[in-house]
Amino acid sequence: MERNNLFFYYLNPTGIEEKIATIHHAAIENGFKVVEDAKHANIIVSIGGDGAFLQAARKTKYRQNCIYIGINRSGEASLYCDFYLDNVNEMMHTMQHEELEVRRFPIIKVNINDETSFFCLNELSVRSTIIKSIVMDVFIDEQHFETFRGDGLIVATPTGSTGYNKSTNGAVIDPRIPCFQVTELASINNNRYRTLGSSFILNKDRTLRLSVRQDGNDYPIIGLDNEAYSIKNIQDITVTLSDKVVKTVKLKNNSFWDRVKRTFL
Picture 1 (tube, rainbow, N blue to C red):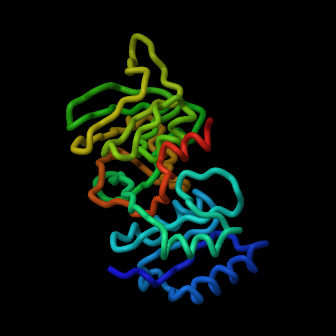
Picture 2: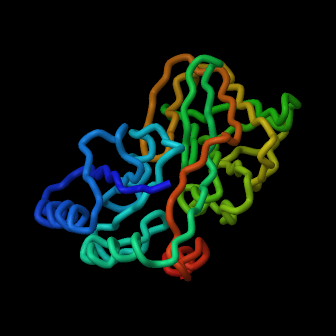
Picture 3: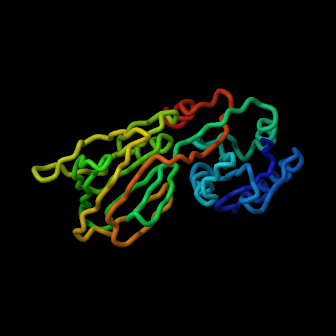
């Protein structure tokens, strides 16, 4: 399938308007068509780093018939962006002539109160909004696993494992493994509440359900990637690994672990 319809997504163009115009011009010169509506695109290009990439995927509803490409504003390391704003011509040449591999990043599906569904490429986080610990019963495939009490829980995808999850001592997971990871935020362990005390990883066919105890903390902050949602009276949060994936290109000799090394080591 030929892919040549480009849609550019950026959060804040201030200071880079000229470079964005240069990208548009270079795309057209190289035989691509720049479209104004993402619905007509088969390549979606985000400009602005990992945050912009996450937003681009969310705002365009994780299109399954599109390739997502990330462009970083500067030379900073990035886990989702293969290209840099200062090397537009290199990007165009690479897309047309270099050896590319399509990566497929897993996405989790989040269902709240069996009513509203969301998708996450990085992670779901559930946190208390008041100065009081939140209590959640944790079920795996509808079997009670533990009763959590603390600041909250993170449920991360393999690519999301390098973000918020890693900062709370979760493991970094190879995105070739279809799974998701649950990590604690400041759990309280005593005679009444007892948790595993470490992250745990669930296979792609598992279902995780978090039942929020209605004790005054039933209005937690739900973090979906880099967006926060406040939803009243949250009772149940169900998480599964979606059949959807985010497809992006991998440059030759630029694997996930190459990116991890550049970013953290």
